[in-house]
Image 1 (spheres, each protein chain N blue to C red):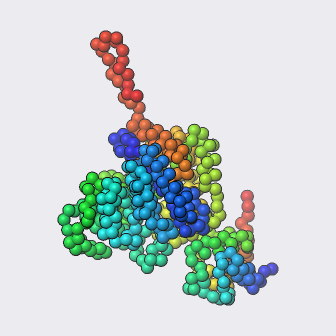
Image 2: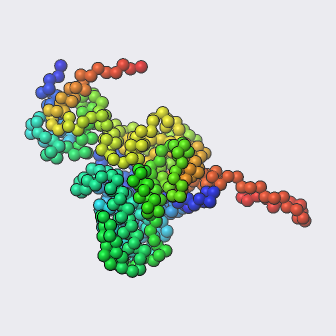
Image 3: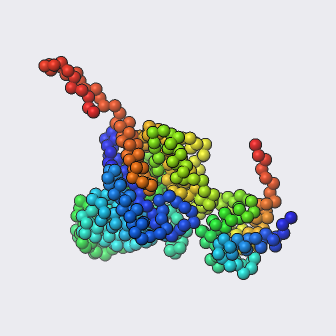
Length: 88
Length: 372
């Protein structure tokens, strides 16, 4: 079972490696400090899908969930915890 | 190409390749590198468009693109008649300077410009420029903006204008513009505010169209001119057309996310309307939203055989659309295929030629024959 710390660590790695953004802590406000503009948000959504195997629907999310690495981590954990819809 | 369809003169434009610094999603027809390669592409597309009989060429603008007035100059210098259709956004330039640009093109080249007035489809673009004007007020502002431009262009006398957003005080346009070069005015916007602006300005109201059945069910307003922007991929065989379409616009997850994010932040009526079109309606039907949903382009596409696609185009003409702006062409051949579609559509709208009366009193008793 993944811990919040592990999820946050993987998200920090996404910022560093894929978005080329250094984030000093899991609580840094990413939107206020300009780390997350619209282009970066789209790239972040894509990387979260790939890293965590979740589906991101931008029309159905609250940008407030993406204010910090910690809040993103909580959101990702919540998505992972939801049961998959039955297929067929 | 100003084909005549049942008394309606069609005005058909194509679109100039774009140049953008936003490389987040690959978009056919958009370049990120400038320089000779891109310039050559612009010149090639402009010349192909003119050779294939298109009336003009749309040149986009938004915060990520290069200055479209510079591209208009390139188009004018490398063609004889093609009309640059310039997207104009009030936030970018004072109306006096827009009028100055138009007058300068007329003075230097003797060529006409067309304006595609935008109220601003990307709220984030406007926000970056410190503009948070609400949607409907943006159209009021654009109405004043366009009115000021046209007053400057049309008057030989000093112009005074007192609006809410713009004021002019006894200013005379120099150099004056030859009246024959008065710009054509189109306006993008499907909302009530957009329609009000188009009505006030007498502009061609341009939109990204819903399926034609929507307009057959709810007719367009009478007394106005309407245009649509759409892509066309038509070939002799349906499978051939769809293979080209899917190759040109493959599924792109990043594009889909970008489209969904744009849907979330956009306040444009057309964006929400197109996003709401049910996929089931479009599967296999010539009307295809794949490129839009994958953020490859904003216009719906008609894909199919020449006959299928021209029948849909004919129906768009019959419900009242007389201006068509097709998407960025990948090559000259594509423009020939589009030309076939518009010619077939025009024939369908005109209907079969009436039978010529049988000749009487002719020395040989022969019919004169119907029109070719």
